[in-house]
Image 1 (cartoon, helix red, strand yellow):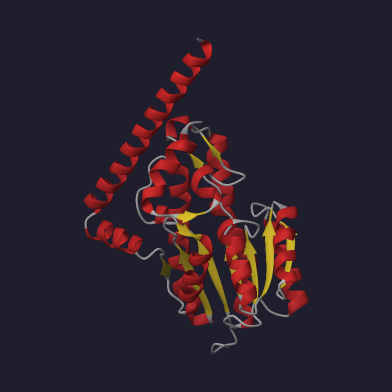
Image 2 (cartoon, rainbow, N blue to C red):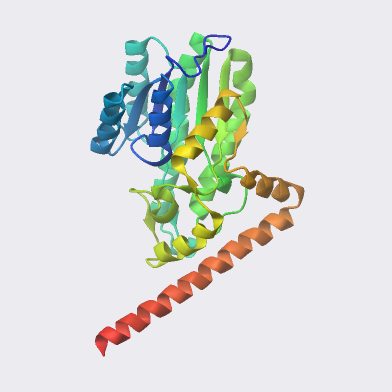
Length: 298
């Protein structure tokens, strides 16, 4: 359908998706293409992005892939300008690329902070700075910025990630007020626990500051029933079509957010429980690793 003001939702829409080679970005690209959109997948993983785009095309969809570093504004601006020149419009900009550097803050180096900020925050800013003027000029468009529940509540063991995601929520909700009179929609996507590469390893360009954290995170996250990424994409796109300001799926994470807003003490208690659980898992993994090493030495 076509919304008032020219925005296409989603048939024949033009959508640029950063981080489009895997995880949520890939799921968005494939789902949007099935709904008739023309998708452009930008990602540092150029070969994988092209593989995804080729799969979309083989299924009858319309997709192209471009190697993209979202921390490079000129590259993002070039992608947007070339897309608009070729398609004549830009309906959606999904500022989705992100990484996590997981572990306690005491183990972070300044280079870790800079990398997370460059991708998770500056990448969103670059996407907005490149796409927003185009949308203002054409009088329609929708900016969808991927934040996280870590942008709404405390998120120990990943403070740098939480820092950038809180910033993305603040940026999005502030810009949403400015953009509405100009015909441009702005939404913050705040996923709960979604089964993607970033969940356990920080993504292909992220890292774990504590080597045993992978096993600990697996045991910690699985009881929270990670949502399949394709199911998430379907639910999120329905919320985007409704122009929701802050989009949270799975639904039960909304309850966690409401409780944190109602009583921050509840949110802090939940975060402390997560932190303590992670510490126990790390201790157990370390003990198992030591036993294994002792057995090998024996």
